[in-house]
Image (tube, rainbow, N blue to C red; front, top):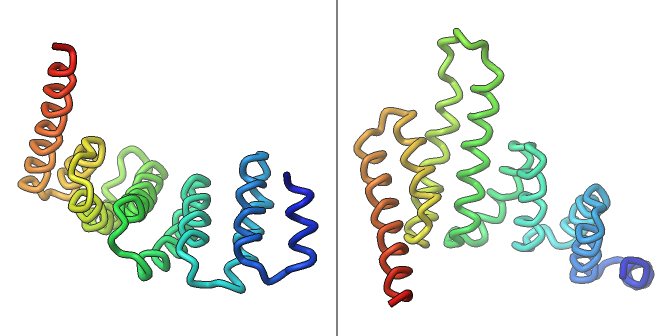
Length: 178
């Protein structure tokens, strides 16, 4: 699957859709570095391609390269700020960046600078939930982060909404059994 795409790309090097297909094929073949390089090259010719930006940002997020992930995901957010998944990914990047900072601190450290990253995650997680209110795992994450930055009313609200979502899921599942 890769060889024909590489050959076609050599004949049409500016074809962004072909590069996207090739990057996807590399990913499916376990060639993540080649996929990332292909996404980068595709963005040179199509810098505002939402799919390219989100896919590349997601790969950086998976590699725990949060600043790079945020660079691409934020650019995609400029194009479509109404994507629940994208808002979640940006929130997750900020949150995970904060977790990495916190985890690198000595156990007795009083440094709380990592909480700034948590605070930066909150509006994106909230937007994700505004767009998709049924995601109980995001409600739980929002609740935990809000508690970490002393926004206890938001934390309580998030946990209660997550519990309501879980009840609705449980209630509908029990109704199906009857």
